[in-house]
Image (cartoon, rainbow, N blue to C red):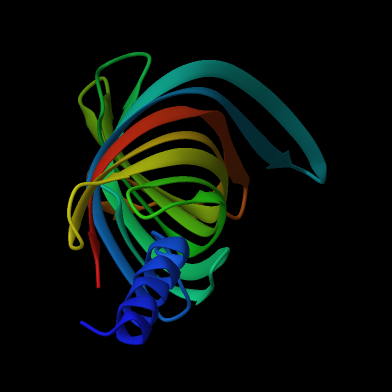
Length: 214
């Protein structure tokens, strides 16, 4: 091979190695995983009686097991924008209720280390949350539905095994603010004219996901 052609080939290979990154502009990311979280909760219930508000606040704890589905597109080498949908289960401290939770929203991510087979990233999760709690009070069956805003911060690492598949590990802070939207007893809707409730949650979660890069 002529010396000049060899030099050009080596230069091209050097550029390719130097620019190989986990995220680049136009890269599509998809991940599916599982997350377990522990949360502090605060429920504020307010009765409206003859123009007077009587409030009671209850502090408690909860655990979540969710299944995050995330998709994103690289807008620059150091940044991607995506969306997430995260259904799962919510278990309060009484361990007596059957609960389901869904988180959803947009997810900007920043790539602090962006190598071909390893990345360290930080991100935000901005969106909403819904919580469905069914329980009982004596012989009565209750059904409560909350929904509101959700906020999250995360940091994580990616180990990319092949061009397509990798493992992602994340540590996340999660918070939600969810007013009570519907309440029923034995299938009969209860008017919220005279009362309302708001559930605040905040906690941390560990997440492991299988990631796909296109």
